[in-house]
Length: 581
Image (cartoon, rainbow, N blue to C red; front, side, top):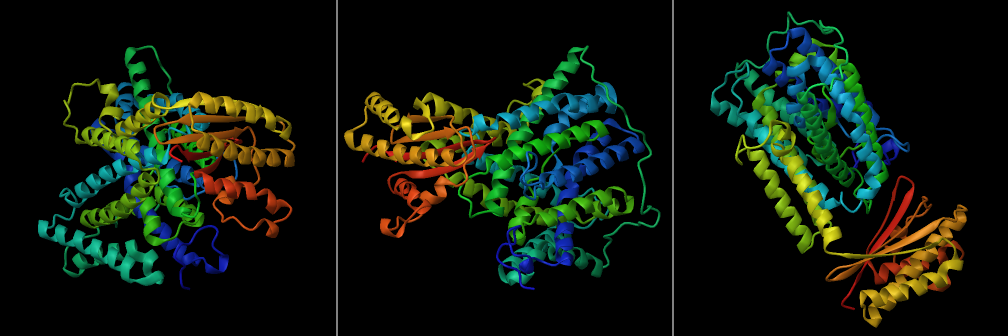
């Protein structure tokens, strides 16, 4: 079967890949994901000299919770779940706080701190509709670009790692990484549609086959490792103690880690939507909120079981862009494979023993794809002010990730922020966006009822606001016309669903344009931005419901950046009008 350019959940069933291809794609995702899942628990076990049983238990529960969290992300059309194949792994943001909790009170205190701070991620998710002007594509793009820096750093560190069992000459490691990159790019660029999903698998196969043919050791001795095995440790229990100053410091560190991973998840979800559904004009904030809720549930599972909390794993997003397959079925099977591997020590050892040079080469290719997704988000809203936000945020993130800005000058509990480039850069982008939004733009609000009886009152209030904003006559007329068409559309939608609540218009003025947002406390059946983007048809060719869309088509001709988003049941329609008309 020949694959289409993009295989999504909307692709007809007879054009989707077979179950065998799906299983191979899922295995590729597990290869990319697995090292990211076990990295944090393995490092914590080594730093704290945990027993083999406790270390195995932490890896086991972390893997299972990541698999469960990945499955939760696939739920669509509910209050929980992103509805897209978001793969979940562990995050370095939890490294410092988890280390402190384990050192002070053991695994039971770690579990307690995770459960204590999980509700704050729920609060972040619930309040996301109030942050729709803050968590913008620009902020998401900054987060992705900083994730690119971190992933490239990790990929190079993996490529140049000489601590593996292989002990090859440096020239062999350089050659294997380069060959892996070459094979993956060759398959993607010249392999046509049939071979495109196999790029990563073929790159790893060639990278592992060459040293085997050369007589170099690749696979360790697995004869004494059992196929099936459970950790030789018991559930640690849960301890929530706040009777020492150290407990409060650790809790604050966990809060910073939750904030950092929530912001990172937002950027990853925006990039995934850009790849999985490029035809969509806007960010689906309802789905984003559901994904954050699912992430909260995954965090609670990790707390109750004694594992490390999971967060979005950025590396799997560019892999979907590379293969062209973004169906949820691939993620579901990958999660089941991950859960199965967690019960098999032999499979775990096989996954972690893949040549480091090969995995590093794979990471470089994935970083290139993620860079492209980040650039698309950034350029979606690029102007002088957003360009400055991007530049300052990237500088802050790069400084933090370098770990050379006055090391030791900041308290240990701030490590998840000041030593995490994604967290600090993302936070700077959020703060600068808030300053830009509320510090340099004036906002005026108009609230009326959502029925045509309020039309005269809306026009009267608009006249007052036009005078207060000191607009010229032509710009004022355009504002009245645009608000009129949006109001008529809202009234039609509200009448259809028998809603009679208030409608608000917020008008902000900056140096070059007017930013207008209309909102109502209900979900509408049609999308205003999709209608506004169409060409205006002759009025005599329109009738009935189509005639009602003519006003929005006119809106699309006089306004720019017409957007329609729904968050938590609230509808927001925004547009811009140029001042220099």
